Structures are given as structure tokens and as C-alpha cells.
Image (cartoon, rainbow, N blue to C red; front, side):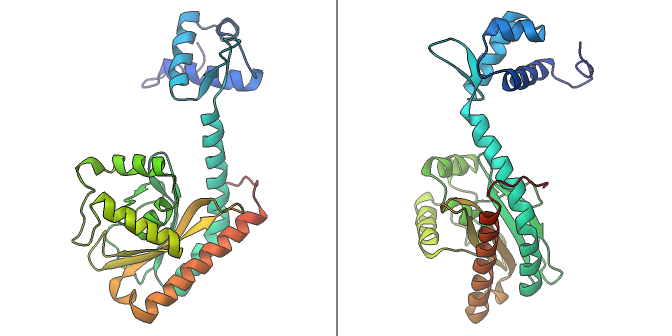
Length: 270
């Protein structure tokens, strides 16, 4: 038994599955089940069960011709998102600080996660009192925050459906205030408008007296990988002041997009 496998609360099956995954990645591109079981001293039946479980999540694939196993494309997708997220947070943080200082509002960075819109970074303002704060690593209510909708508006339809289903769309989206969009058709029309004009607005949809604006961050190819947004008292998000905040937010998103274009493959610490 390897060190740690018998630790309280640990999962031996999970550890074996991870050992298979790492071993296949290091010794592939393809391996037979007997090879894997022998190399890792795992019972062949157990190895088969774990490989089948990972195959269901597209982490492992079985070559239909050779009956041998290889890494699945889901790993490539997750790895690409991990690289983008790490790079994005580093490249964006200076722009978030500048945006927060210039606007005197709280600002945040959002990215699409696993069935949700995740908060990757945030800079809070001392001049804004926000009751509902989304901490780094937590999920944004996607349908009622500017930064959540700015990302949602640019996702493929099937990803939008997954996120809305996770939010309980089958019974109507959760209502936080009288302004929250709870009907799917109304929300999708709002997302269409956001996609056309290039920015999202939140008018007291999550919290009474709180409004926000957000703009998407794009790659060179135009693919949206996140959004930058700000939120503050609704009285400061009206008329000329709102127009200025929209311009500031879009400029910050453009600077982050340009910075990402200069370092498309850089891997940085979060």
C-alpha cells in the first residue's frame, strides 16, 4: 500500500483511478487493461471497473479497433480551461485594480466553470456596500448579475441550458428581487441583446439598490473566455455616470483581451 492510501477519509478507489490516469498519461498513448493492471499491481477486474467509470465521464477513451485505452478529450478541454484561467487571472488583476480605483466601485472577474459561472478574482471598493458578495472560487448567480450574464450570453446553447438547469430553471429561475428575470424566454432575449451590444447590465436584479455592468473578455479568435464587471449603488449607475462606467468596463475588458493575445500560451500562477 502506498503512503496515504489508508489515511482516514481517503478513497482507495479514487486514488487507484488517479494512479491509472497518471500512468496512462505518462506511458501511453494507448495501453491494454492487462498492461495497466500489471504495472500498477491492481486487480484486473478493479482496473476494468475504474476505467469504465472514467470512460463515462470522457476522461478515458477506448479505441474501438484496438480495445486499448487512451486519455479522453475531456482532459484536453479541462486542461485548456485551467491554463486560460491561470493566465487570465494574472493578466487581469492589474486591470481590475485600475478599474476599481478609477470607478470607486467593486469589480470582479468571471469565467465559465463546470456548469456554472465562477468568480476568478475580485477587488472590493471601500465606497460600495454590497450585501451579496461572491467570493473568489464561488459561483455567480448567472441569470441576475451583469458579469454572469456577460459570460452566459456568449456560451454555446447547450452550456447555457446546463447552467440554467443547475440554477433550477425547470421551476423558474430563482427570484432575488422584483427585477430578477425568472422566465427563460425573457432571460434569453436579454442575453441576445447583450451579445449584440457588447456589454451586460444588472439593474437591481440580485440585490435591491445594487446595479452593475460587465463586458466580455475575448481571445484573438473572438472566443469569450470570461468577463470583467463592476457593481455598486444603483444611484451611481444612471445617466451619464452609467455611460462612463460602461465605457470604463469595456475598455478594461479590451485591455485584458489584448494582454491575453500577447501571451496566448503562458502558464501563470493563480
